[in-house]
Image (tube, rainbow, N blue to C red; front, side):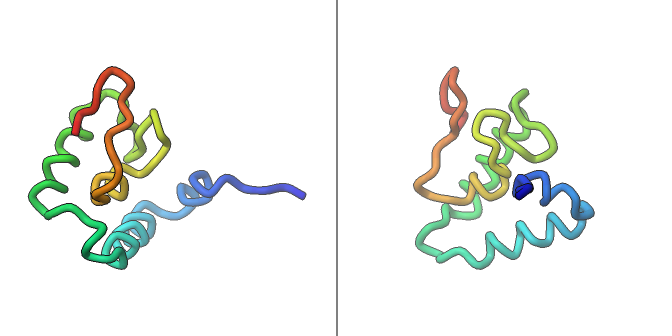
Length: 84
C-alpha cells in the first residue's frame, strides 16, 4: 500500500488553503501552550532571516515555522545555535 507524506500532501493544496489550514490550527491551540504575540513575531522574524528556511519549512526539523514558533515548549533546532 502506498502512503503519502503529510508534508508533501500539504503542498498539493493551493497556497491560500494551506495558509488558512495552518492559521486555523494555530488558533485552535490552547492559550496556555502558545507564546505571546510579541514573542511569536520575534521568533518568526528570526526564522525569516535564517538561511535554513525554505517554503515556510525549517530545513532542520521539517516543521512549518509559523506553527513551531507559536508553541511555548518548542525551541529552534538550528545545530549551530538556537535562533530563539
